[in-house]
Every structure is written in structure tokens, then in C-alpha cells.
Amino acid sequence: MTATPKHRIVVGLSGGVDSAVTAHLLKAMGHEVVGIFMKNWEDDDDSEYCSSNIDFVDAAAVADVLGIEIEHVNFAAEYKDRVFAEFLREYQAGRTPNPDVLCNAEIKFKAFLDHAMRLGAEKIATGHYARVRQNASSGRFELLKGLDPAKDQSYFLHRLNQAQLSKTLFPVGELHKTEVRRIAEAIGLPNARKKDSTGICFIGERPFRDFLNRYIQKEPGAIRDDKGRALGRHQGLSFYTLGQRQGLGIGGVKEKGAQRGAGDHAPWFVARKELDTNTLRVVQGHDHPWLLSHTLQAADASWVAGEPPAPGVLAAKTRYRQQDAACAVTQAAGTDFALQFPGAQWAVTPGQSAVLYDGEVCLGGGVIAACR
Image (tube, one colour):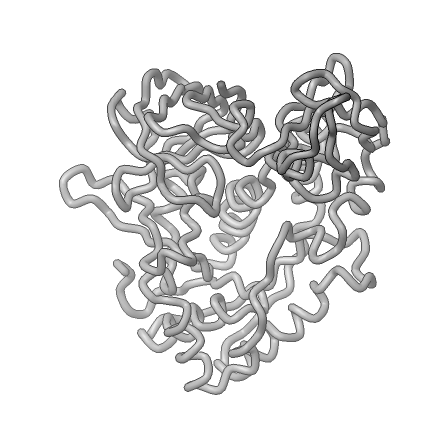
């Protein structure tokens, strides 16, 4: 980390162990640390699925143990305008957005950063598993993968720019998760063994389709396979994503007069969403050609360096939990770019992010618009 002692650093305390250890590490280095708990959702605070009240209690308990101040700040209005409205627009258009990417760019490193600066902060810090480095030759700030490959979150941070990175610290990005929990236990943090949060922040652990039902009208239609055969009815294209296997409500299909074989019971996967006819296309088999892509086009790109990478060989992720895939940048101009993959990519999904890497350096990325 590049920060020098006695900086005033505002830490986003979420109630989880990662941000708690972040605050501890910075305070141990001699910084003046202030905690802020961000409340980003308030439509159903009292439901069994919304943990924000519990999380604030945990964050306050951590602040008490560490001996730092904590402020509760409500960003729900900004979140609804900048993140949730876009989330709904994308689903209604048949795409599958990633709201965590937008939340980082618009809330955690914009609204939160602005608030921290008003408090006199020189830096902000969060518990993300990533790293920031200033390039000695260019002077530019680089976003690096976290050292724990199983926890790296640079994919979700790829829209951060130079101004944001210059003010940001990610202390736990230098550690493995096991070490973070060990530190938390050693200093007696009350949330040392707290389970990591999963899923989209405003949905929590609730069934996803139940949540969307509250905001998006159902438009049922036909489920058809790659041969055009009708297999059943879907609840609305917005409720399905490419590569989805569960919750389709269909069984096997047997050709008239054909002998029953292993293919009759092969699993079905969502392969296409045809908005013009409101048809959900499904195929059998994980490696069906409809599920494989060698090229993609992306839009609304954001580059960490402020400019796109030159055409050439890099690596990319088209979803968070995947290994880097070798690719060639065949075109990158303005906010659009195209990638070509020597190896087929599975279930590339419009609306998700395609993020580019040069080794451990995250270059940025954009929103997948089309693939083939």
C-alpha cells in the first residue's frame, strides 16, 4: 500500500469480516480511521431476507472493538436511481445485468467516495479482494487482482477510473481469506466467523423469481427446443438467463417411433431468448453448439487507464466465477470493443460484463451486447 502514516481514511464497514480487518490493518499502521456503514436498500427492511439492520449492528460492534467512530449513511435514493432502475431496464429488455458492477462504480466509489471527501478523508478503503498499484513509469494507477485467486473481486471493480483508484485502498487484497479470518479471531472481532454474504445485495437469499415478480410483469410464452418443438410454457423471458438449468419445468422429449435412449433424460439448458416471438429456446447437453461462442461484441466500455487497450492478445472473463480465457481484441474504439476466443466460451450472456486482463492487471471492460 502506498499510503503514509497519519492519513485520514474512511472505511466502508459492511458488517462483514473483510471490511472489519481492513479497518484494523489501517489503524494498526497509524492512520486515523473512520467507519461508514452504507445503507443502499430500504424497501423491505423488516423482511427475513434483508440483513441491513443486522449488518449495521455487526459493523457498530466492530467499530467499538477497534475504537473508531462509525457513521450510518443512507444511499438508498442514489442506489434506486443509479443501480436498481438500470437493473430493471436490462431485465425487461431480456438481458441479464450485473448490479454489483454498477453498485461499485456508482455508489461505493462515487457516492461513498464523495461523502468521505466531505468528511476530510484523504483515502477510502473497502474490504474488496483486489489491489491498487501506481505504475512507476507512466504514473497511472493500475487495478490488480487480489492475491487470493479464489476471492479475487477485480471483475466487479473493472469500471473504476484513475481518479477513484488514486483515492482507494484495498488492504485485504494482499491477503488470503484464511489469513483475514485468522487476524479477526486473533484481535477478537465479533464477526470473525460470520458467513460471507452471497447474491445480489438487494435480493439477499430470497428466491430471485419471487423478487422480480414484484417489479416486472409476467409475459408467459412458449418454450421450444432447437428443432422448434413445443416443450411447455415459460413465465416471462425476464426470469431466465442463458445457461440456466434449474427451474425450467420440462422433461425429456422422445421422437415418435424412436427407441428410448440416454438423450431422453439429458438436462435442458436455456440457450436463447427470442423477444420478437416471446419464445424461450432450450437445448439438451452442456456443450450444445447454441451454448458455445467464439466471438463477442461489447458496449459501454470503461477502461482503467482512460483509453482502450491496443488490439492484441489478452485474457478475458465473461462471468465472475470463471478462469481467464485467452482472447484477441479485434477492435476497440470509444466505448465498443470486440473479442475473439480460440477456445469456445460457454453461455456468454448479453448484459453481463466482459472484463479484460493483462496478466494480473485488470484493464477494464464493457457490457456484452452480442455473441456468436
